[in-house]
Image (cartoon, rainbow, N blue to C red; front, side, top):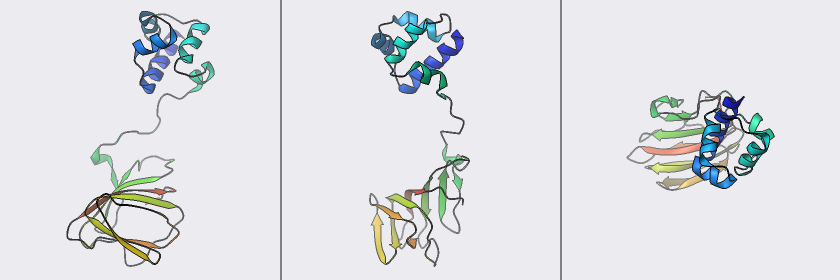
Length: 183
């Protein structure tokens, strides 16, 4: 039991970004006592644990029921981003392997002359993005605009839309679409 409480407390403290010394100061427990609890060498009384958790703050019930470990992959290296693009367009999807993805977050690259297709696209949801480099022509309904680095967009995706790089250099942008689409 003491090992479990200590490991959970250490994981929670690290998750909240609180040093051991800071937590000890906040809750009025000595640093050495807190260290021994986290190492599983001492089992805290319920009142001591409550005192420590009040300084975080968290209830004792939440402490024992909180899932402190992520079941899904959280961090991705550049080579782990799945390319779900078509044609010349590259869509590097973050979290493609997550079964319950609620959004699509991508790094998009459009070489000069590349586009999303001659036909406008429409689907349920919303999309937002910001241009990192280059420029992109975006048509949403009857409105067309060329966006450059630092400029952004946000629209309802049920309105027909199209992206096209009409510039001489590649365009890179980051975008987010909800709900998550299966590519």
